[in-house]
Image (tube, rainbow, N blue to C red; front, side, top):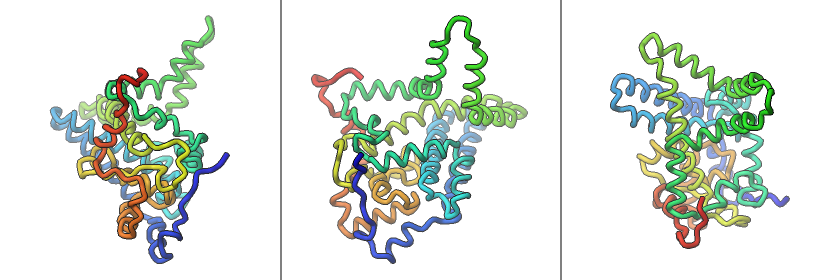
Length: 316
């Protein structure tokens, strides 16, 4: 297996330039986690007080759910805190969990980015697709079909494979064990909200955004990062795409600097909050001219991903 080519920071930055970019903060990552949760709670409170704002709350909460996943991703690179113990604790227990499992998988993606062994290649390889196919994916995302398949597809498969007379309880018990942290969060939120008449808070203000808007913008993020990039791309500055994002896009679609994905692949241990600075420095040096950068924002990337002619399509 040939690993993907890498960029040596020493060829682009002086030691004085590189040191602050690579430095991990003892508070910035934790502050971003706190920010994500405060925004989620504020949006939830807004919806409780003014129910007409529920659609806006779903978008805001779904965006910060993605934000927590992005911060867990930073923890997978050891970039969330200067102490690895604090980094791993925060990544596992303050962002939604799954850090240990995700780290092994994700570092494989970086090692083999856009190569045949890349575990994420299947997410980007089908693109471009037709506009009709993309619309179908969007509908499945916004109606919860995609999330249900990802979260409960394995349970459905095990139930269908159950032989006559095979006990059902062990299958359900195993599923509860796998989902215990997610379900425990639901129990806690319900218990806290019930005395105030907000017993519905967990399904309406957490699960619903998680199964709809979060799923859509996760797809948009995946498309923006690696879609329409050649398999076996040899240039390490073109393994991933940076997408210039407007303020609204950063608030609703691309939180916590996730849009600087080319820089992230070039320097995967640089904390997310230092990526904008890295981009500006590379731009001043003229390096961004050779990088994969989309200045038109996420809608432009989605249009590109849906650019396959219908006459040449296969229904997806």
